Length: 174
Ligand code: 5GP
Image 1 (tube, rainbow, N blue to C red):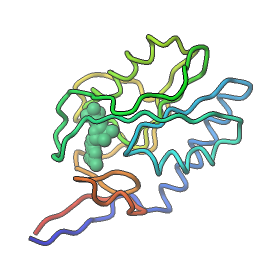
Image 2: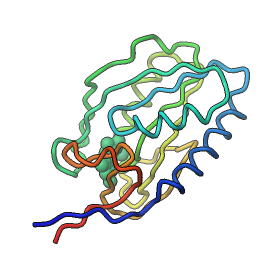
Image 3: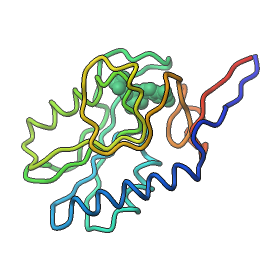
């Protein structure tokens, strides 16, 4: 069986949109206490570009989460594999996600973070697959809405492969 990845969103389109998101966040968080909470592993490349598109002092922290095993279906169970390194109380949190699919991961993380008393909490996701939603989540900063295809690249994987592709695509198997 051979496998190839079809481009859905090019590196250039991603770069343009990430700059726009960074400019929006820069406007909204002037004189605030911004901390980007980067959800690993899928959003590491998006977050690296996004934080450089934000022209403000900010802090970054990382949260390791596992919502899928080796397969491509959400289990609905969100496991924290690596917690934040510092408290977020009194701070303005923006959660940086790669993709909101069923919404279960973000809904769970919002509940978890609210118990830690941040001043504000918002969500920034590169991708959204609205047809798959099982819970409603508000995405305050969204890169692209996509159809119901399993995507890889720009940080996203299938069984840990393809994270290093500079574009977003879907895997085709012949
Ligand atoms: P949710 O809880 O919203 O269903 O899923 C969120 C997580 O599932 C994402 O952070 C991502 O890790 C994974 N995920 C959902 N859809 C896709 C997809 O199309 N491709 C990849 N590689 N991961 C996905």
